[in-house]
Image (cartoon, rainbow, N blue to C red):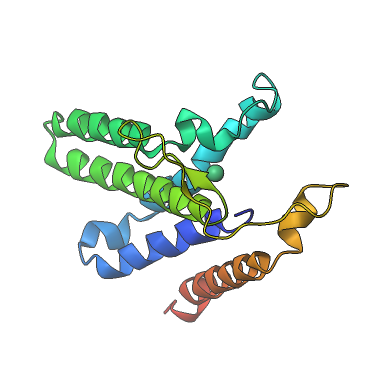
Length: 176
Ligand SMILES: [Zn+2]
């Protein structure tokens, strides 16, 4: 996936918000939403390393930033740390923000598994999981053409449109 990460994280966050009836989630929604959006793209920050120090030697999906196990560890440590906070209101708020960040991370990993693969079962197995759709390497002039001119890009555009419609409705149509 190239452009769908952010809109999918947005749709996931919006869906969770609509199903969550706590007043806190209805009034103080900005930070959990931002956390989810950041989580939706955070694993790809490793591209900075991939194109510089990493020298493009191995697929960035093999990095710890694209390995669910490490994010599960990070989530566990985060929630344990939050659990030690004595202020119940702050604890609840941080739980939501952290939770939405990791929801974003999860959406990223799921999307990356459709046209790519991830080590979903690491450290128990080194099996690459995913690759349900294979995008052939036809255009060598610019590797992105292979993605943009593949039918999966239409799916991405549909997701972007859907997120745009949902955003438009929440920003304008639903306002009093
Ligand atoms: Zn990725």
